[in-house]
Image (cartoon, rainbow, N blue to C red; front, side, top):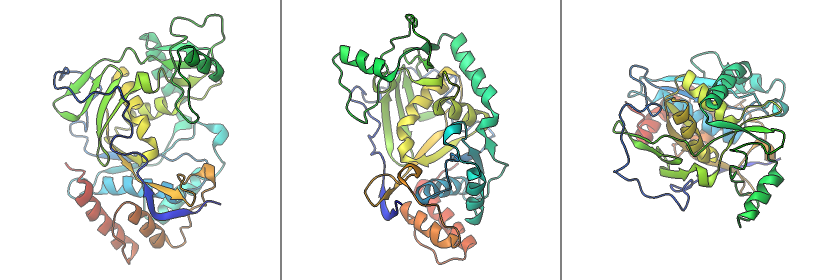
Length: 356
């Protein structure tokens, strides 16, 4: 079983981790349509709403606790410690990977650590109709299309363009089926990345969108940039066999739950530009983002359920939380648990000042 290398955390991405060579510097000549939809930050009067969104593919481990603690602290540190709302969402739409009872175990582990959500958990598996409505809206607007390409087909199309994909490199979809299936059966619905409206707002100097080119500022990593069309291509919204893609589900859920701030692991930083593109096309608000350090296994890889991370032992929650706090750059605390959490709220506020 993989064991965490506590105190040896990885950012998962540097301040330029999601940049592509085609990304120019932010250009002040980009349009600033103040009435443009989809790029609002904290909605007027809504305050702070954050979330922790685990997949029930197993119990929490050391790495996932870091993300849970960070998102909880960010919510509680809001408004000089007066606090915002913190929600838990169970992302259980990838049913083949979900384990019976894992969600309940995760909720118990969070409770053991004093991390209690302000509302009952939201379950993605109960929201499939909402994702279907978002997909149908994109189809009706000419922004999504059926695709019949296999991975082999995509690799062949890329090679025909002189592009050789390296192992573990993103498989950039070249838009083969944008104008029809060419006699193939559909295997997925894909989003067009060539029809993203420009947007930038004076109220959001941390965010600018010019077509598929997205500039945004991570609260920990700093300025980020990705051209989604060249780095990812037209990405999948839903597979023909049923499952909705993570990108679509998370964008719909964040908007419907009123999420104003997303705090999650740095392994998800490269998903952010895709989600901002979807938010633009669905005319949904864009939260502010912060991506936390990753806990590494002894072999230097990100600690995860897939590489055998051991289940979190919450019999001594203070000791477990101290390890997570140190990964986040927070000082250790001797306890008791409530005092430690209160101290970390103050330390987090000093580091990241979530506002308002």
